[in-house]
Image (cartoon, rainbow, N blue to C red; front, side, top):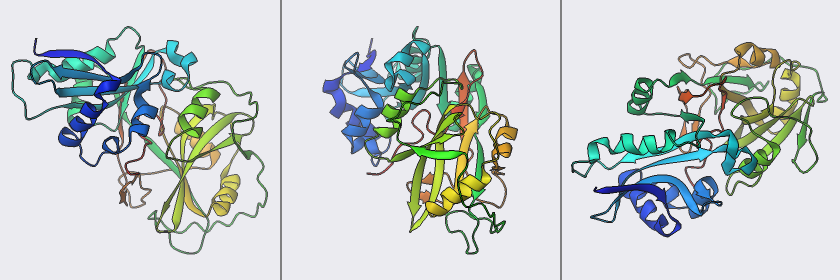
Length: 334
């Protein structure tokens, strides 16, 4: 056998970064930040990384790899749920041998058919990967994007949209309060893959680069947001949710107060799997990804365009996806 398929060891981290630099993207943040690699992929229990590598026994190099993230990465009590997301999946294109043509499949099978994996999802796929998943009978879809524009008289600079001049008169927030997760919060997991307060703390509060904020909504759920600033203008993005959004009151006026206090043009919410009426009831509009209104998705670097964000999954339950799942909400630059 030319290859040994196994997890990346701590001693091979520089070899991994060499692979990313020369065969994936030389500007990828993993070539710059060991801290982020450790945060996202280091398995403390096993003292190894959540990357399956194809180690070439002849050249002593990595010729391919596939990354994965489990909810147990951020809350060990969730590990038994077996919920995993895919990350980087790459085979070298400059190598020729008798095994390289099936190497991608072999690596993928090492993850997906692991006995610990009970659900598996992916977000932001190439056309090749999406086609492969379809042939493997994974369910496919596109994340929906919902938004609320701040009421203002001056043009938006991050978004491209007609002015929102509704002018609500409410001055005090009724249903939403900012929290820091240090207090006891009695909100149970609802959507699957399951999250927990511990998950939110370790995934978001302790993020080494990004700063997140947490909002309790009507004692029913906790939303995680991240503020993005481009050329002195800002936007708020809801990236995750613990609890349920079902039967929430109209939050439009509350969000207007928050947008004003945060000096943000809009707030958006990406999701797959929750009925759109739930978002309409909260006061959101659904973005037509092929329409004239633009609510950007890429910020590092900034691209003022709408994005069709593909997703795939295989699970025996109603699978829900948020922006913070998998490796979607991670820095591209330090």
